[in-house]
Image (cartoon, rainbow, N blue to C red; front, side, top):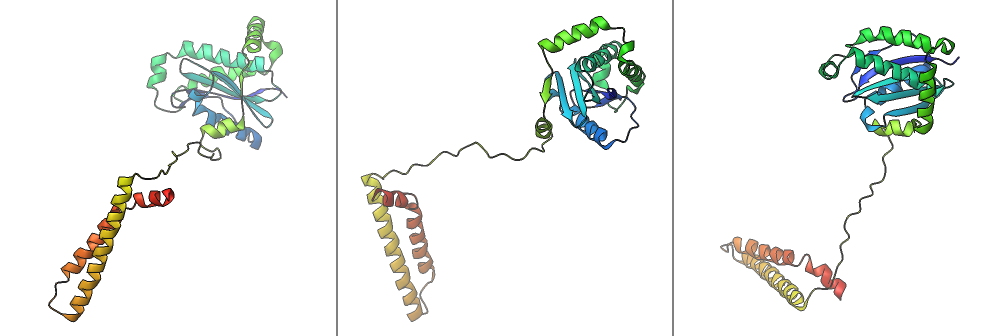
Length: 247
C-alpha cells in the first residue's frame, strides 16, 4: 500500500532534530530507511534543496528552505508529486509556527515536538489522496517536479558524506626529481672532499696504531680525524650520485 510512513524536521546547520512523527513499526527495512534519513539529516548542507534516496522498498524524500529541512520516508510506489506536496505543507506550517530566531536558538532535540500533531494530521490526509482538496497545489507541484526534478541520491552519496566510502587512491603526484650532471667546479669539490676524507681516515688509523704502541697518546686525536672523515663524506652526499649519473 502506498503511504507516508515517517517524517521529521531538522535544522540544516547541524542536523538537530526539531520534530518528528511517531513511528511504532519495527520492519527491518523501514528501520534501515530511517537510518538513511538520520544520516542524511546530519549533512543536509551538502545536497541540493530537493532530493530522493531509494532504499529497498522505501524512498527518502527531503526539501530544504530557510535553514530547515523537511524529510519523509514513504513506500516506493508513493507518487513523488504527493511526497513533495506533503513536505511543502510541512514547510509552510512550520515557517508560520516558528520564526527563524527560535530555530537558531534551539539547543534540545525535538524541542518543537508539538509540531508532531500537524505532521500526523497531514500524514493521514496524504495517506488518503482521494480526500485531498488541494488539487491546484498538486498540479503546480507536478509541473515544478517536471521542470526541476528531485536530485536522485545514491547509496554511495550517503556513504561518502558519512565518511564510509572506500578509500580512493590519492591523485596528488609528488614532484619528480631530475638528476643532472654537476659542473666542473662541482666535480673538483667532490674529488677534493673525498681526498680529504681519505687522508683523515688514514691519519685516524695511524693514530690508533700509535695509541696501541704508546699508552700516553691522546685518544681525542683519533676522534678528531674520524669526525673530519665524516664531515667530508657528508659534503659529497648529494654531488656524488649526480656525478655517477653524469659519468
